[in-house]
Length: 456
Image (cartoon, rainbow, N blue to C red; front, top):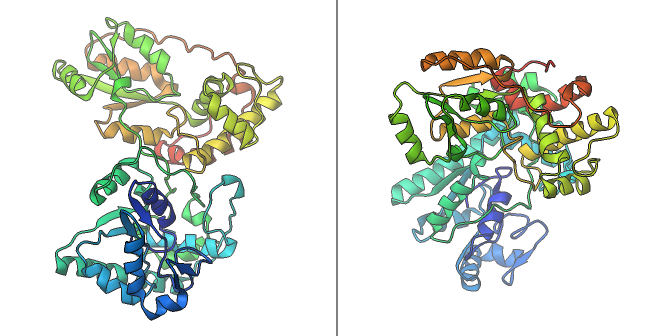
């Protein structure tokens, strides 16, 4: 695996080692250790032995490991190993890359905190570091030179490598594509032992963001202002789509939104149908010339509160509740009950929002459920099949649905009233701290969809 520091190579190695018949031995040719930090021997080879004959260690690795064996190689590792590996067509090559500015800042933070891996979000160490333009230039130059060396060697020898970017290493489908490339069985799940570190926007990680932006002004490909996205990619969820039986209206629900209201509204048009597969949905569309598909967004605060009440306080998600209580120390009342007062409910909801931030950043072991996944991720999932024609907002739902009905030649019925979830309403506990926690958890949605502060 050709990679660099802070590119996600630990996580990729963990998933390689989870594949049957694959063993990655770490940074076998790191100048300071063999395999992993503080390890000074491997297969009977000491640092001195490796220095004398590094290729003998490669041969020993192959002899002592069943199945596929390999290692991580960075640009500053033993150069005597590079050429023989590149020239061997029987050696599978994986090339892991990451935006250089992100890997540079992550490297600086790891140097400052001493934390190079994270297995428990409770132990997360954070720091702001100083961006050094000259040091970054040298960093980029070294990475680019190495990548050009790899590319040239592969091209001139007629080989190919499996390229994978940092943003894709938590995509199970991509890693199973890697398994197919290696000729081994696919993974059922991703390794969950390592957690994302420092998921904040890049400009929040340095003490001199203005200086950094000025130094990189000509390198806009680094996307300095973007919020890093570690949220798993979502499928289109076509079986959950709901269609009006007698009108060309197709609803693509965002869980946690006004799903029941919209579904009941659609029933007026001759009832509803669902449980589509992609084939049957295409058939439905072909049979309804002029059809319209749509979804409805809800303000992140209201949507998160709906998930908190409907899935967590209700006790629907028992295992996740247990993790929140035991691992994240969130005070929750008995399942199905509310807090005895507004202060307790507010504190519990803020704790949930802070947990959601960790969950969406890949820093918890719990799944990212559709009820609190970012709406941006849900809509991107829709687009893997086909995006909606219209994206409505809950606060103007009646106007939006009336427009849709007119688009397909129908008269819009009234929008049914929302059903109460039975817990304390959001208006009773909402304040600036709640809004701030929601903005922190759902920065991606606030930016993508232009949400302001929530209003009852």
